[in-house]
Image 1 (tube, rainbow, N blue to C red):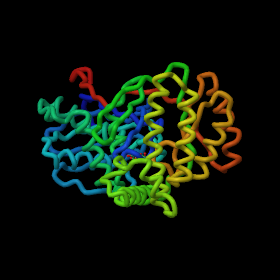
Image 2 (image 1 turned 180 degrees about the horizontal axis):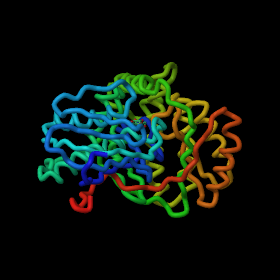
Image 3 (image 1 turned 90 degrees about the vertical axis):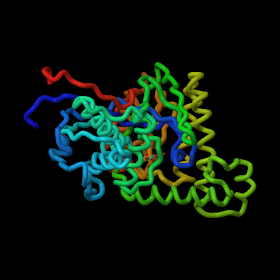
Image 4 (image 1 turned 45 degrees about the horizontal axis):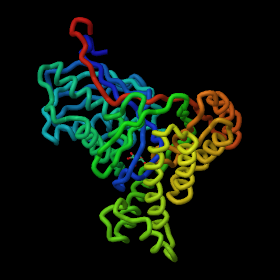
Length: 380
Ligand code: GLA
């Protein structure tokens, strides 16, 4: 593509969230897992301050200089690359330009955080390019800071006031494990995924229209909810105080608060269930989470509800829920290993009839977070 050998490979995974939805920006708990669907950048450093990235999926080349990085139109993949470059530059990291090709198999716009995968793969490419050119980036750009900067890039270049979950798991995911994250202080714990259980992704095939504006509205409602309780964030609101105040209080804010408080507890319970290998309990918690996101947080959709409903009717499925921000995108199901085929058949038979949409069903495995490696100059 660029007429010279590649010097590095940088990669970052997508994710599913097992439970803990819309809790991250409320300083709550989440339990995501990085998946074996990734974005990969293969490239080489440049001697000037230019970045060129060619997307094989879109057959498009993005070119910009590190000193002036304007946004593109909303929704374009280039914004994630540009956003990361701008945020790293503004945080005073001395960046090296590079040429790279980009390819991914994280479904886009499906709630599996393809955007965080591009962001972290780009960040790793900057680390790799610096090292390959003999100008390594400051070692302080470790996992946690990398996740925070990528989150800032997403917020600035897409306008979505996202939490930290997606970028954190894309950076710090552990192979074979889910990651419990306390979003208050970013302490985290890797919890092994039990053998014999499978996480099946059901892509509803429905686009996530209005997701960005509805997401920001939910976030504002949670802030209003915290203010009602004179708390900094919903993490500081006690359930008993909520119950006392709920009587007679109508409207969306109280519904959102109710979801967040109970969802936090469900994450803690889910972690314990996972540690015990109690998949029945974990599945039940996932199903309760879905109901709460549907009825209290109001971020599900008819397509997601249909996918979850069909999945829950299959023998050997422990539970199912939407994953990610919602408003379309993907659902996940926790299943016994030997129930995967029956689940796939049920979805393929019933879902198109109920929704008029074509689903995609695939099993995912817990993957490691973002990384890079240098290639031998001669090997290319
Ligand atoms: C999106 C955001 C995350 C999180 C989820 C909902 O994926 O990027 O920060 O808020 O929605 O749990």
